[in-house]
Image 1 (cartoon, rainbow, N blue to C red):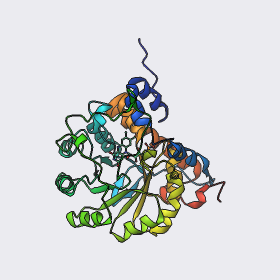
Image 2: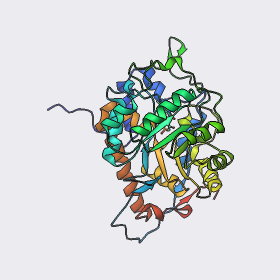
Image 3: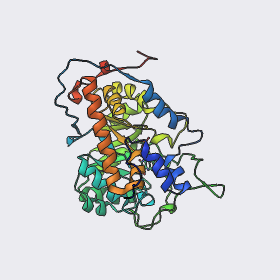
Length: 350
Ligand SMILES: Cc1cc2nc3c(=O)[nH]c(=O)nc-3n(C[C@H](O)[C@H](O)[C@H](O)COP(=O)(O)O)c2cc1C
């Protein structure tokens, strides 16, 4: 009997397996952040600095890690973040990750730069899905939004932290910054390399988007109380506190450190989600204790997709779910609504 590589026992182990499997430039493209990667490291470090305050002698014989996000029931408060070009990692790309999200009872967010089309992913996976939008131009955006609406996507997630691409210095090929070749089968039906991020997108475009669709609008990439307030004023129903996994502006804080000011500013008028550095069930609990409705993961499921396709992504969601349920029991929280500021301690602040 041959024994294959041991199955990862946590999400972090998928990274080293993916590294062995992927070409160096593709691995570095996924793993890397902008410039000196201060923000990339800080996302994890800040989560690790937060401590948990367990309550004991609570009946935790039934643990319920489900919640709702924009009215949709999810089995666990962990969504799949949008990430472009997943065929680079596995031939099934976004089809596999959307199927895994559906199997786990959660939401997949499809990137504008997906390898598969809006309709192909809708056909492949019947779970709830959001469509992530970059407004390259209003003409292209209007077409994508209409297609997403027709294909049954439940929300439009506009990414607002990318007026231009961050300076990612890690993936080099022949001394030049490596940007993965866009696979032929892309969502827009033409070569994305001819498309530029649009530096002229403003709040007017958020209003325009709202006039275009009745789907809820989610803004991804909010990092200040000021912008969170503006988002609410512009009718946005959910905010993702995100620094794009440290891939855009290096030197911004960890998302977990920004979360409290955003939650406070929003005053319950929109749902607040978070991504960046979430690798453990306890990270999920920390974010929820500070007011997030749910979190999104990026690299963890991309590494698992590279290693094992759809089963890999399912496994990552299963590992996080198991860790989350164990942590809830040990924290004395039978359901997510038991979580609050009293569940955590921030040694430098509290
Ligand atoms: C390889 C890769 C591709 C990404 N592509 C997109 C994208 O197309 N649109 C987007 O809004 N965010 C994109 N992101 C950012 C993720 O949605 C998410 O914000 C980030 O990965 C979360 O941090 P984490 O990787 O530490 O979990 C990408 C991230 C990675 C690693």
